[in-house]
Length: 215
Length: 244
Image (cartoon, rainbow over all chains, first blue to last red; front, side, top):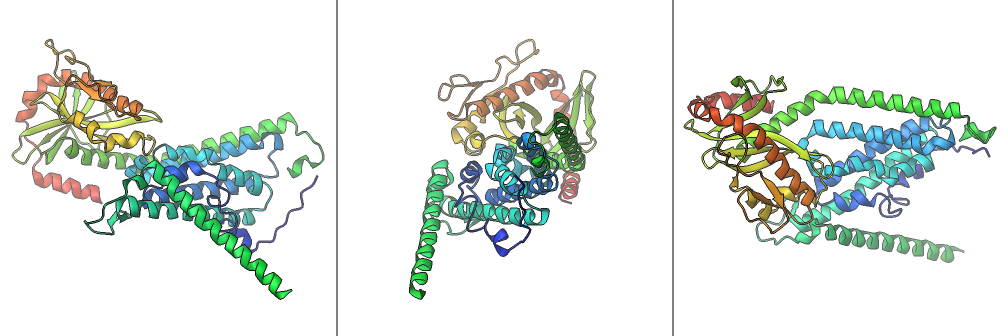
């Protein structure tokens, strides 16, 4: 069956990744780096940007090649494309800073297994034109980075009393060490999900009330 | 997807061409990136090693790079890094008066995710390992990277025994990593529970490096002690060059 391509790019194409379909807070994809490397703001930012870079590059290639890739081998092709850009990212981060590379550890290589990226390739890039794919992927990447940052900021602030390494509360602050340990990741993610869903439900309820009011 | 509209099954040839083409393209991209980043990565590693030398040898302020081979000791320029296979590179570190404080050398062993590359510091006075610093690793954050912060683990390297055997052919006791909490001898490394594989990699890397370097080095230690260290100004200048 032929797929009718809708080429119109709306604000929603970009914004859906940040809010309505946020990969972390709504789709709960790529949880492994979300929980593991958000113990400081700089790690979260680096991971978010690295993932965004891989997402943008692989979506571009998948979108450009979408008419040439036979559907039987599409997943294998996507994985090879993603793995290529992950390897490139790996080298680039080593060239930027070895300290950052050592801090992110195995999670740079594990971007390959980030289901958000494969999901975008399969569900979006393989069906849409380049420009639309890029807009959507950029939104998704920014949404992912924002989510990682919101975890990173809370965890570093509470667990270490600092932001980007600068002390925020002075000497008297007793850090909540649990926050930078793995359990802290789950606690903070849970709190953010609660807040996110609460806002969403309240918005939905408000819209419903408004519709009833006007009709 | 649109290509398969007419025929439900794509031909094997087109699959082969697609996969082969993608593999070639990705190979090309990876090689290109590797070529472009090789220079900066090596420079980063050099800077990292220089920083690490003073970290693993407490009290040192100056350093010299040497290449050790069967023919003897040779002073080398760290920037010119082409070494023959039989040569071992190491660094001698001195304090302000030019006293030899210790020897630092690189080594590596397989960790959990990838090779763990580290620099270890050897103190010829007590014939022991005084510390180590990670040059490159890809261990799991929160687990493997505990080797950098775990106080009990780092305490292993206050004075890790690395005496040579009587015939000076190897270490008296090989440095081994033992199960957490079961360290009995000064040449054993107490592993971190939950990061055993990374702990073992550290012990193994130090053992490998020490076994290779120390027996050969012992004949040259006296010479190294008398060696004039680089004047402080020259070190300051080279640090400045690094910063640029």
